[in-house]
Image (cartoon, rainbow, N blue to C red; front, side, top):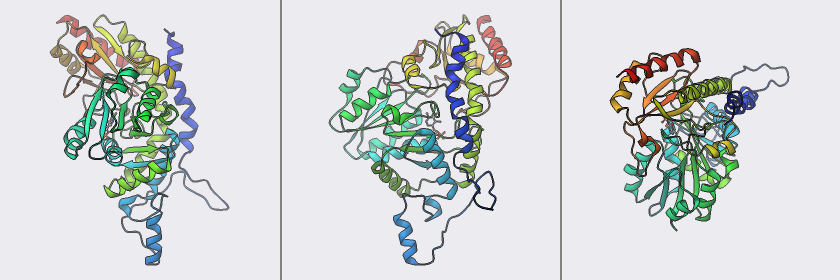
Length: 407
Ligand SMILES: *Cc1c(COP(=O)(O)O)cnc(C)c1O
């Protein structure tokens, strides 16, 4: 295993590489004698006025090109944010959505038809799975789940002639399996299907399109917005054809985010690399410390060999985020884990992650799986490391774990 300093560098070097870009993207540069604000203006609007009916009709034809047509089709700041995300993700085009979940839904609606088959990673974000089960099925889409660590032969075996989408999330929600995205792309493309990757964990440190993905999803609510004060999402694609389908579906289903949410997210992006450089280092420090604790059976941090798919993290990622899992020894009970979590003082209890604050949740509530999962090995929890002092976070976890052993 890498020594501690090398590991700290391995989780954070990609963030340093992103720092200058994050400061500069989607901003104005002064020209001539006029001055410009550092930040683009927040323009609110519904109605857009045109000089003639002809001009209005022409604008409608340019709906793929940041045109102002009507507020529900996008505002100047939404288009700025779309360019910023496309640049970070290495995509040709990005569509903003009102939430991360809406961003998961939109490409499924855009690229699936009645009678089509959708193959989804078993470790996918729970609400994405519920959307597939409760809504896609009603519209005649066939759904199956693949084990997140499935081999190429196993994934091929689950594909069918009518497979249109392979939906991956890497690392997996709650169980953190890192997936072999180039392999999934190879299999999907052999069946004429598109590979969707929910890249929320990997924004900035995993380039989905370089590894064969066709569509990348972001819950911008998490690290990009970064302050637990807005809900917003994004879908990126890398071909003109896919962009037209995605953009038309976004307009037809009214996908839009308010200008203030776009402004908060753009502001968050400026400090994303510096927050993440710090948070990723604190997280690996804490993950390594947790590994030394006798109460802990396994740490599910993609940068550690104990995480399933660690070899793909090592091959494909330029850093890590600060969200990871912990499995306690199987002789501890779920009730003991819940008491331990309630005893923590530095960690908030609540949904979501990616803000500046540390959070913790047991990963046993409301988790549906079709295949075996690492999280069944013992009581499991998920930690999000924020910007607090690392020593204080460790001291708090130490008192929590000490309490466990005393029971
Ligand atoms: C949080 C999350 C979402 C949903 O984002 P919201 O903005 O909360 O709707 C989607 N995918 C992943 C992987 C997430 O973690």
